[in-house]
Each structure stands twice: as C-alpha cells, then as structure tokens.
Length: 157
Image 1 (cartoon, helix red, strand yellow):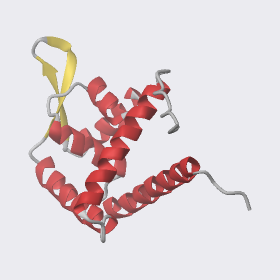
Image 2 (tube, rainbow, N blue to C red):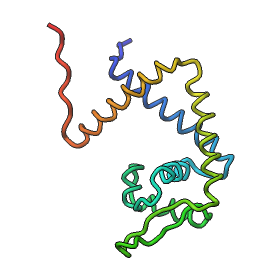
Image 3 (tube, helix red, strand yellow):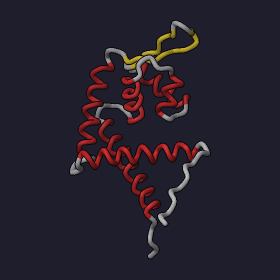
Image 4 (cartoon, rainbow, N blue to C red):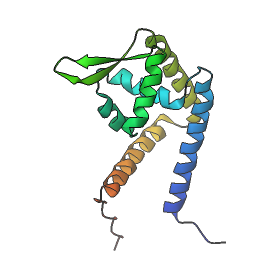
C-alpha cells in the first residue's frame, strides 16, 4: 500500500473537517428554519453593518448574484434591510433590522455550542496554534490562486 505524503494527508484532513463542519452546521441551523448561508450573511453583516452588497459578497467569497438571492430572502423575512447611501443613491447599504437581533444572538449561541463540541478535548494553546497555521495556509492558498505562490522552504543542509 503506497504511503500518502504529509501534504496530501493534510489536504484530505482539512477537506474532511470542513465537510463535516458544514454538515453539522447545516443540521443545527435547520432547527432555526435557516440555512448555513443565511447564517453566514447575518454573522458577517453584524460585524459590518452598512457594508455595500458587493463588499459583503467579497467578504463571504461568493458571487454577487448568489448574495442578492440570500439578501432578498432575508429582507422578505424582515431580518435585513437595504438603505440608500446618502452619498451615492445608486448604492445600497445593508443593515440588520431590530427583528434580526434576537436571531443573531441565537445564532451566536448556536455557533458557540457547535464549536465547543468540535473543539472538545483540545487545549486552548493547541487551538491558537491551529488558528495561526491555518491562517498561514489560507494566505498561501490565496497567493497561489493569484499566481503569487510562496516559495517552498529549502531543505536543511
């Protein structure tokens, strides 16, 4: 049986963890009659109220048309509103409605509970280390997708 490289094992494990985390989040948020995508929009919007829709699409790394559909549904449910930008009437900015506040709070609780289960048994220092290394990995991937891949470390002489 061929041995899998550490790099390939890392890729498989990150993929599996992400897939399982998405599945668990989907299951949990469904109890609130919401989707994981809507959860992501509300959570990011809470941190960046007044953001333009195009900027939020960039933050969420989704296509603007996909975000438009999500925002339309959240507006219809009374959770998000579009407001005209006083400096440029062509631009609409996004805000949470008062009705969204308890939903966002419940989603935050749900996220805390979910991650407490996911990270059970891990030392806080280990979690901090993983965060640091995954952030570096993400930056390496971002550069690579833009054609600016970091150079591989040199082998010790």
